[in-house]
Image (spheres, helix red, strand yellow):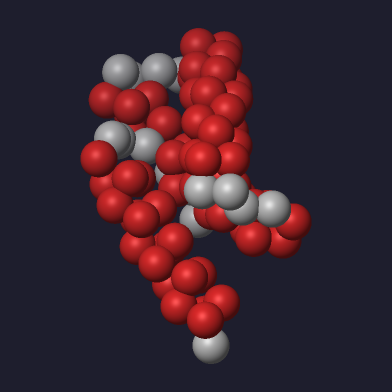
Length: 82
């Protein structure tokens, strides 16, 4: 039960963080990127998101499956995927 509460809290925190900045896809659309420029932008944005999410997971002292799950959702939210 305690783990479920922690997971729910992490989801809320992640959602709030994702809501603060536009996703990579939204930024690319706003900049009207296409082709190689879009590919390059998305790769860099995803790399930056992963680094940021890994740092956030470390800050929250997550490990194992909790860290993996948090990081995966965080990156997906930041990139704008479903």
